[in-house]
Amino acid sequence: MKRPLSLLALVLTLLAASPAAAQILGSDAAACAPGGGPAILVNLVGLKDRKGGLKLELYPANDDDFLKDDNQLIREGKVFRRVRADVPRSGGIAMCIRVPRPGRYALLATHDRDMKNKFNFFQDGAGFPSNKKLGMSRPKLNEALIDVGSGVATTTIRMQYLRGVLSGFGPNKGD
Picture 1 (tube, rainbow, N blue to C red):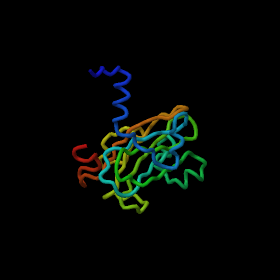
Picture 2 (picture 1 turned 90 degrees about the vertical axis):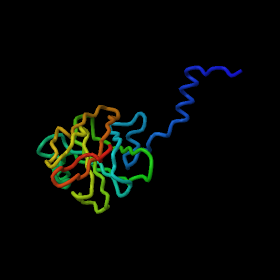
Picture 3 (picture 1 turned 120 degrees about the vertical axis):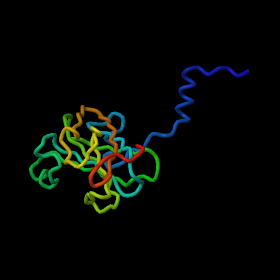
Picture 4 (picture 1 turned 30 degrees about the horizontal axis):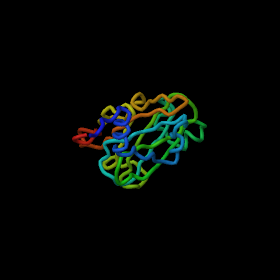
């Protein structure tokens, strides 16, 4: 006669049967390892497809510097960081970006579907930590803000794509 599994044995069995967590992508992946940080671990969901590349960009948390040209931010000695990765063929998608110190930052995620390294309004996707529908207006700073402590802050960003000239950017249908 079989013995019932203890609660601990049941949990371990379920964990072993669960799919593996997403591999952490990008050159800053080590910063999101246990004991790492300060960093941001971003789970990206709602991609339109599995082609092209992904990019995370970190900006200062103020209106004047949000989405400002990276060369200008660097020249002025302000916070700017970029991490890139190819879109994996399958599985969950997580990216890590290191931050210089604990604090508040603005974060942008993009899906560069054509790999031209320039945002194509008609093809590429974008997302921010608030996951608010972007529509047709320029994103507001408060949609991109994230607070980071001394460890790893985790957020999920739902990617958005142009849904039509009048509708603007929004998540994919069914997402």
